[in-house]
Image (cartoon, rainbow, N blue to C red):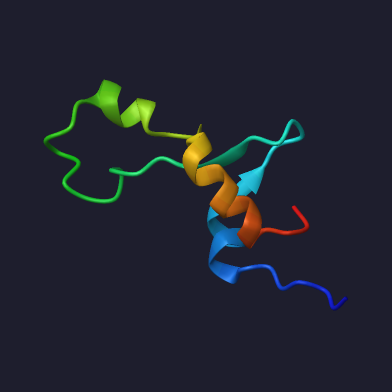
Length: 65
């Protein structure tokens, strides 16, 4: 069977942890930041876990991750 291709867009946006959780950056952090509180913007830093309903789709795009 041939090797599977990794989806280029997915490999830039997601990573899979050692325990198999799919992580991605938080949204709502690119513009219109003046109206958002400092606490809210701080909370959007770093990464968040992808919901289990979507994680299966992401794993299919990253076959060797």
